[in-house]
Every structure is written in structure tokens, then in C-alpha cells.
Image (cartoon, rainbow, N blue to C red; front, side, top):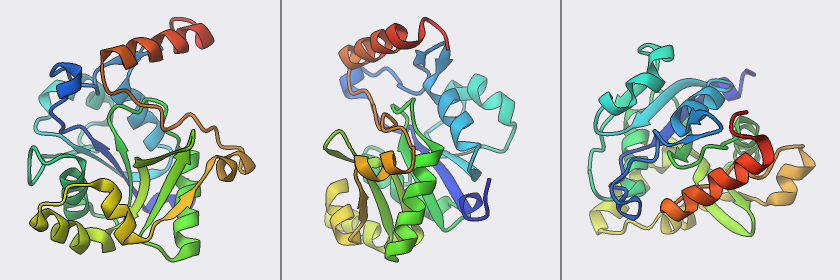
Length: 215
């Protein structure tokens, strides 16, 4: 862990209602013999001094959190039911650090190397956020955000605007494309996620073909 990456607060947003998963929580889903959450916490521990899970309750995640003791903080959404923008506001409000690496709980392949690269990009541009673009798609929930964006978030929520992309626009975020990561030797599958049961079936099938049932 280098000096700059040690400043990162790792944030996992797990407070959604999972409607498209028929109410099934994504964090405890498994791939390669590990739950999504276990994989995420393990990767975040490489570069984050403070892991933060935005979720209503610790109970469903006890098994994954046990190896970390009390090091992983659980914070409930300040505005439940308003989506990831409200989760990001909660994280910025509750985090001890100034810079947050934020991911959705449905991204089992997140990359600490990508997070460090995004933070370097954010610092170079003196921006409030660093965003990843992979597979010709922007990924707001694998990004690095400075807490200076909190007033913007609060204003948007007051306005009733819950669009993450609008927040990114207001923050004038630096964008990293696939070539940016490839030039640094960073794999580009880190933003893969699932939205529904079919996505999960495809992801596990593809992973099994590449790595076998367990890594």
C-alpha cells in the first residue's frame, strides 16, 4: 500500500432493493467459490485504510465480515430507497477519509490497481472524481470521488434528481478509457456487474469456463 492509496476509503454500496433480482441480495452471491462481498473486501484491503459498507444491517454479511472484525464499518442509507446517489451521499457523510473508492456490491471483479490509477488521474486533473470507461460504457459505480462533491449530492437530492450521470457531469469528472488502463497493465474486466438472474447465470458460466468451478 503506497502513501496515496492508503488515503482511500473503500465503499461498497449494498443498500439497494434488488428489484431486478427478485429481491435477492447480490453481495452474498458466489463466484469462483467466494461471495461477491468477500472478493470485494479482499481486493479493497490491498489499498484502502477504511472499508465502509453501506447497508441497512450487518446481519446478512456476518460470515464475510468475520475475518475483518470491527474494521469494516456498516452505515445505513441516510435516505433509504433513493438509489445509489443517496448511498454515495451517505458514504461521503460518514467516511473518515477525503477520497472514496466507490463500487456497487454486484461487481465481483473490482480492481485495486484500477482504483489507484483513477485516483492518480483525479489528482492530475484536480477534479472531484475519476471515472472508468470500459467496454465503451461509463461506470459510475467503479469510481473515485472526493468528499468535495458532498454539497452537490445534497443539492441534487433536495431537487429530487437521483441520476448518477448528472452528478458526474456536475463534478466535471476525469474519464479513464480502456486504453488508459491497458497502458498501465490494469485488467479491464473490473466493472463487470449483474442486474438480474440471467446476468448472474452468464457471469458464473463464463467464469467457470475460464477458471473452473473454483479459482
